[in-house]
Structure formats: structure tokens, C-alpha cells
Image (cartoon, helix red, strand yellow):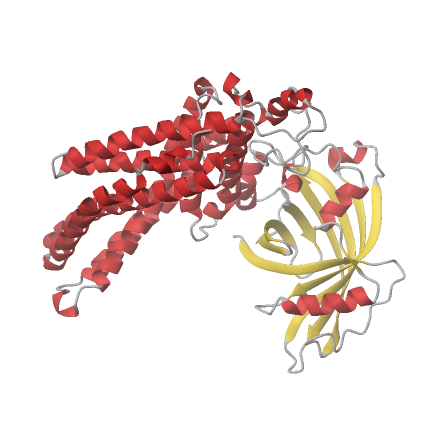
Length: 547
């Protein structure tokens, strides 16, 4: 069983003969106590092309010390990582390898580097004796491991000395800054490498020619090697190469391919990074991952003059499937919150029967099933195939001739085309008879609003502020239509709850009351739509999108 520890620390480089200064009096530090010496032996795992290291992730098997076992470190922010731990075993444990599946795909992590560390630990305490931070002076020996032992042109071994200062408990991170200033004043230097592994790879030459992580985009610090997987490159270079030939030394305006591929890279990156967050059930992770799948599918459909639809269509269908699977849990979450909020507004005198308990049981049963289904999807072969398809698309984007055209011309036309589609759907919905047909028409308009908004978001690097403002206006329409659709779904759930209550011999009055309020809420949204659409659809808002 894995558990997680939030790690907040600072690292410093020191010379071999450097002396640790007296840190008593450094900010809130009052005393410094010895905590012993440890001998640590860690074997770091990665794919042969170092996909984890490229993404600032470490997977290691470590013996020695008080936390021997498997450790997976996931970046949260600069100097902050979540360390997911599992007991010692011979092979990387499944509960940890699952969390890096979106990065490694079907590649097996193998031993890459071995680090042996002699660690001398001190505990920094405040005047009340409360532990503030743990300071470790590490003497490190790094060696290549496994097949990497004979790879590369660098030395097979490296040695260095460093200091780590790690915050304890829920302490104030400012303590680390206070201690850091004292260390720097004594000659220590903020570490150039973010981790021991990063330094070991650099000093043994194993980080050379390492490709950028999947979905990193054209601005990654290490662009993908043109020799990787058949020498096709990442496609972005292909878009820019023609521009460079036209005028060396002159900054070229972005092409449509530049703009669209940047957005594609961003959304693929979000999916990859949120995969472990969804598996760990972190707040809002399912929703954000689902939104990324929708944005990606939408841009495939909007920018057909840039990306070949024959290639993106099957990927888009798989993204639609993934969004639907993720939506089971997210829709339950949103619906439950809506019903609980509505119930809280009902006076106690009108809450007849165990309505709150029935709602809670109904939601928990749905959650248990949806959570299992999401994990089953992420562990399944269909999802892995989708990730591999996205990886291949980024490696060799299916660019059409329009990709080389000036970005404003192509992306502006695409946004306006999606807008016209939205306008037709809104007009049809307003003309539809009240009831089920209008509900369905408004739901279709909501989908069109999302597509138009995402197209405008993708166009921002080319069209600037007009695209940003246009997307914001369309979002207002989308939100109004979304609230209407949520009301439709809520009424269906309330009918289900009322039926269950009736079968159990409970009264259904309160559920009926909530149903009526949802009907009124939906009617309000329908009355508001014409006025909002009149404002959003003014011709002047679209004029700025034309090149």
C-alpha cells in the first residue's frame, strides 16, 4: 500500500572541505541537534530514453535510513514534490508504475543510476523546542547502472557533497529561506541541479541527447532528437524551417501550424500530467483532464486546414470516449453538489423524510462505481493506445498546406466558421417548442459554444486580445446553456430519488419541490438567452477576428 508525503526542501552545493556554520540564530532557529548518520543506497529507474528524468520525476529503490522502500517523486512546484512510497520489493511496484504510465507508455523502467550516500543529519528547532527543519549533509557517490554503465561518453562515476534542508511537518516555508541565507553567507551555493539524479545524469554524461518529455512542445529545454523513432522529429521544426529560409536573422510571424500545434502540445501535456493526479483522486483532477480531452478534440475539428482530419478523426473519437468515461465521476460530483446546495435552501419545515440521507447514499453508491470504472479505464489497453497515438502525433504532426500560411488568416477564419455554426444552433433552439425538443436543441448549442470558445482560445497567440475577449463572451453563453443542461439532468435525478423514496415508503414531497424549482431555474435561463445572445453576437465583436 502506497502512502504520500509532501516534500518541501532546498538544496545547496558545498566544497568538500566546507564547514557547516552555526545555524543557531538563523531566523527562528534556536538550537541545532545531532540526529545521527545514515548510509543510503538508492537505485534509480527510468526508461532507456529517460522519459521520467525529462519530466523531473524520480523512481528509486532505496535501502538504509528510516524510510527504506520504493519512492516515486512527482513535482508540484519549484522545491516542492510529492513522494509516494511503497514497501521494498525486487521490482518496481505496480501502484507506483501506474502513476507514471502516461509518461513511459509501454516501456519498462530499468536501472539507470546508483547513488550511495553518507548522510549526516541535524534537526533545527525553535525556542520552544519544536522541530522546524531537518538539515542533511550528504556525501554522494553516483555510478551508472544496468545497461547505462557502458553508455555515453562521460565518466562512469561522480562524487560530490551537498546540503539538503527539508521542512518538517506543516511548518512555514520561510524557515527554509532564513536557513538558506545563513548557508549562502557561509559559502554554500544554491544547487544548479534540482535533484541528486539530475546531477548524476549530468556529471556522468547520461543526460546528453535526452529527448523532451511527451507533449512538452516546441519551447522545451531539450527538443526531441530528430533521430528518435524514425527520424521524423516533432513536426514544429518542419513548420518553422521554411520561414527561416525566407529571411535569416529576422523574427518571423508565427504560422498557423505554429499556433495550432502549440495548443495541441499544451492539451496533451495536461492529459499526461493529470493522469497520476486522477489516479490519486486529487481534487478537480478528473474535471481538468476531461476539459483537456475536449479542448484537444475540439481543436482537431476546428483546424482542419492545419491538421489532416484523416489522422485526427480516429484520435478524436478516442478522446470522446475518454471524456465520456471521465465524465461518469465528474458528472456525479457536479450533480451531487447542485442537489445538496438546492436542498440546503429548502426550509426545514419542508424537508419531509430522510431526504438528505437518501441523497447521500445515492451519491456514494454512484461514486464507488464511477471511481472503479475510471481506474479501470486508465489501466486498460484502449487508453494506452490513445496515449501512444498522441505521442506519435506530436512526433510527426499530420500537417496540411494551410499550416504554412500566416496564422491570423487561417485561425481567424476557423473561429468565425465555428461561430456561424453556433449562431445557427442558438437560433434553432430559440425557435424550438418548449419541452424536450428545446432542451435537446439548447444542449446542442452548448456544445457548439464550447467548440467556438476553444477555437478562440487556441487562436490567442495569433489574434491577441480580440480572441481573448471573444472567447470570454462565448464562455458566458456556454455557462448559461450549461446551467440549463445541468437543470435537465438534475430533474432526471430528482425523479429517480423520488421513485426510490416512494418504494421505501418515504414521502417524495421534498424531491418534487426541488424538481419544480429546477424547472423554474431552467425557464429563467431560457428567458435570459435571447438578451445575452444579442449582446454576444454583435458584428463588431467578430470584425476584430478578421485579418
